[in-house]
Length: 125
Length: 156
Image (cartoon, rainbow over all chains, first blue to last red; front, top):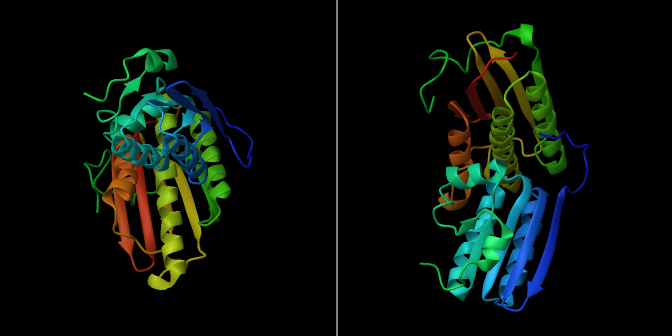
């Protein structure tokens, strides 16, 4: 666990749009304030209705319940909009919170971005 | 009220810490989100320096942050005029090792405990605290809320 010096934002967001799919990549630390930025970025992409929305959390080092709640809201909204949502997570820092809050079972969680983009984008089974 | 079986004794949350291994203390304004993150980082550093396993340190950081976030929400609710606590109060974070190999983290605020209006949202903070610890205890009163988090862990 790194001990970074205090700074205003340790969260980075990156969006990659392709034909039919959009990736929102989140990196760094999610906290009370930055989870709001993450939620806004994810919902902004959902509004343009890609067939597939991938939220890549592979580089997230800290993921408290505010991040989980943002993801749960997105999951519900994606279902309503008919958008397939996939989550990329492979580190304990994200997998453990997903499992504890029982969101892991609901989510389409994959270990890499390539897998998330390659898997069939047919609606959730 | 202890929520899960106490690891060390029935009153693990009242037992004084063993000062031989050092004590962590940090206070910050409950409304200062960066200050709360900084408190969490310093606690993480302290736990790492005590020689705990990295996975345990990660769990301590996350569960403690959930307790701190909870305290911040109490402060906001009290400041809105519907609570009896001091909405501008500090949140106090303490950590130390007890005799017998238990690490205890205590988070104390001066706001009013909130019953989750949306269990999906606020309930997750409690799920995290319970799931990441070996034992938890909550003291809820007019004067504020105290959350105790415990891990079976000894310094090395």
